[in-house]
Image 1 (tube, rainbow, N blue to C red):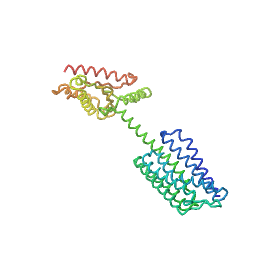
Image 2 (spheres, helix red, strand yellow):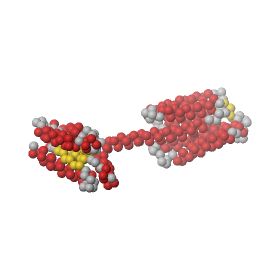
Image 3 (tube, rainbow, N blue to C red):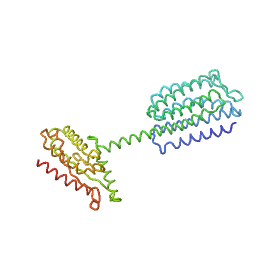
Length: 383
């Protein structure tokens, strides 16, 4: 008996048992996938045990004929069926149903072969013999190979072809090992390739789901960081930015340079009540676009229904006086425009600059901007 093969198959069996026990821990797979992967690992371990016993009995002739027959029967039934278990582990449901029927047919034919030895037989010396219809087992194995290739292609499509090379390599491992074993029974690579494929597929599916999950999280994070109506930064993003500034002011106040422009839309409630909320939403979008056009180099946040804040740094901070003049001209010209109220882009604005030694947090700057904004709103109303 080849000791290398013995050690290899023991490692495979222990690996399958370990994964079957450990699969429910620290995994992002759902309960159904966990169940099917566990089943795959258990069946792979059983098949590996049967393959090893079959080789052992064949080499030594130490087992009763019926025991050798039973072990080989189990192996021949399980081997093609593992493709279905692996496919089901990857979340394939519809494609497995016709394959189950095909593989049940294989089990029926293997069961019949127990009595007539057409597919395989165990002679009086407890040695394995291929029967005249051994090709039937080869046929079912070939169907299994083609099916697992089909499944891997579907997985690659699901993964958006990002890891198609990995999928091809994983499929190649199983096909190479199974094909070698079928062509030459002395090459005992069948369940070695199955066990390696099961492990690699488990890792691949985990990574694929993790990648999908991270993409979903990033999408949701992006959605939460932007206002749904105007697409500018949201209140959540604003609160996070405030925390960043507060930390910087506490730790390195001398390095802080920023200004705030708080904008409050005029007459939004009146527009909603008079023209409807659709017109009100369009009014918000139009005003927001005007604010963004003014503050081209600064992030704009919608912090309330009719409130926006621009945080000025770099270019806009250096050109603060010029921007103030643009805001003044824009707000005064819009308030005087002779158009319907919801067609205007009217808002009041208040500015404030961070001052070292005077401001202990972002909120101190915001308070001054708020005071100036309300003063500007009163002035605009007088116009």
